Image (cartoon, rainbow, N blue to C red; front, side):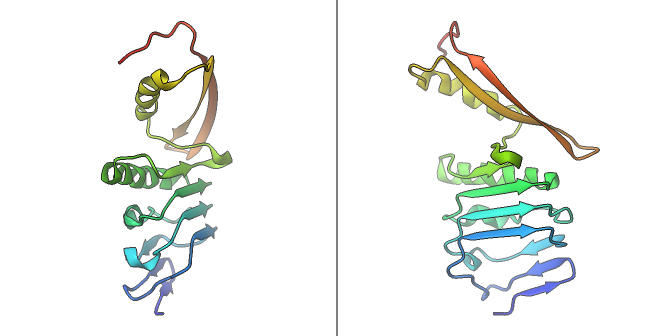
Length: 162
């Protein structure tokens, strides 16, 4: 294997493969750029990035790894857009929402606007539930701070929309 990590870059060649790797957690790495081929992680399922403040984006090639089930981000707010972009790509390609993106405290992340649209169409699928709980977060781009909000909505009185 000729995996090369030089200073702030991790460039994996096409022949570099982690055949059995299913889980990878990078904690406080100084990587700014990461490149690899889809074949590098053939059975990969979960990526955890914690306090990876220099990493500019999650490689979009993760969206082509069929076995990928989840990405978790902790203290790496600059990676949220690329993680959500990968999720959208997977959803567009597979026709289903199979990739879970989690933030701090295992709260699912989603793009603003998409959350309420998907809830609107799924309320009709609820049977005996009296309320639902929605978790979302608000990010301050300037300071990279985030506020996590959890709200419970009572479903009584809501009209069914088709």
